[in-house]
Length: 364
Ligand code: SF4
Figure 1: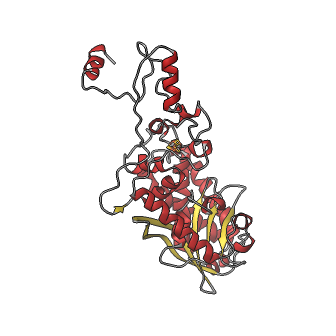
Figure 2: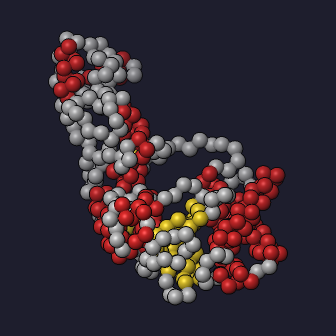
Figure 3: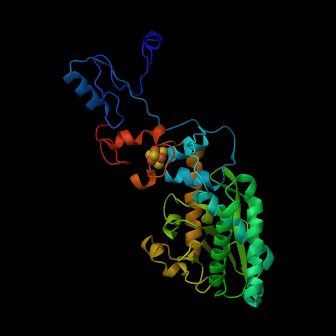
């Protein structure tokens, strides 16, 4: 900062605020490191012969949003549950990371292609009987058409789908969807009741639009809500306080009552349904909730108890957002912060140098 700007700031009032003062005449470099409580800072300054008056400001509470909150999708709940400051930064301050351009397709673009591909496949096939009746050659033709459709949808968003790279990506889509359908053939009879259906859901005063990847209706009239995932996913992210992956729980509480929710993990070598169900036998390898190890650990005995608990937790997360809750409180400490875009704004890294991320200041 130029000396004229510094002087002008210093003369702007009796208390020019400095949220971080890295160095300066008579001021220790650790003056305002956020992990230090007031007594620590004052003692350090006194030890260095500096007289200063400190005032503290709690910034754990932002202003409440005006009127009813709408929009934001399920991401708003995911961010607010993971860390209230993350939700506040992303949806009230509209803070965003600057994306780094890279050649080819990134993981998100690849995941989107898989979503488009499977949506196209099921729009054409529609139910398990038709899937079972397809010959290998007919199935290959369905997959080729679906990959063409996925490419046509995504081409306007990227130039990475042409040439040899595009051919390889097309072949990868066909192969991966074929592997996925081998797992779907193991299921009891079902029909795909909805693909990418939009719903409006409200929790704790926040209304969001969600888009469900897929809802299946089983022969016995039960419904299964599926969310395609190409990356990591785990049931434990839905359970207990502050569910970190709230999409499926939110869908489960939507207008069609669900009897099972599951990630459809579409990943080479790891194709699986990962979820929870009201009763056994709804999806391959998905336990009834009574048998699930995570649910047992958290004392969730039945499907209805799970849905009631989810409703309560999601209402609490929505109410926190509506109240302006902006605490720096990552749910799983450094693990939650690892891939967060808001580290610069929350300054948790500075706090980490004074102790564990997410821990309390001993001095405050
Ligand atoms: S980096 Fe961690 S503490 Fe900071 S906003 Fe993100 S999750 Fe919260």
